[in-house]
Image (cartoon, rainbow, N blue to C red):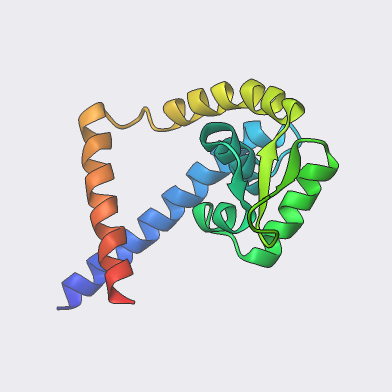
Length: 146
């Protein structure tokens, strides 16, 4: 039993450290463009998925509603997003990426994509596929516990 616990703790530490280093390195090119990771995630989501209700954006990028409003307001103030009010339901507000937002994300995203590819290149294609399967399994099992 002690070996199982020690192995689980070691795995937790290794995953935590790898995640921290990976995220720090993945964020560097994004931050060079004056975006924090959350702002980048919002722009990337709207660029790839089109306009979204503010509530859905927060759910998709795992951000609380108060924080979401702050991020969206900052991006709108920079002219990267705009609010589109729903005609059918006045309680719903969509966020849409502007032309300036599209220009920014299309200049940042390819570099981000290449950076991620480089950061994960230490693993072979098969190892990456295995990691995807194992980490999904882990995430789903934890989600089912709560």
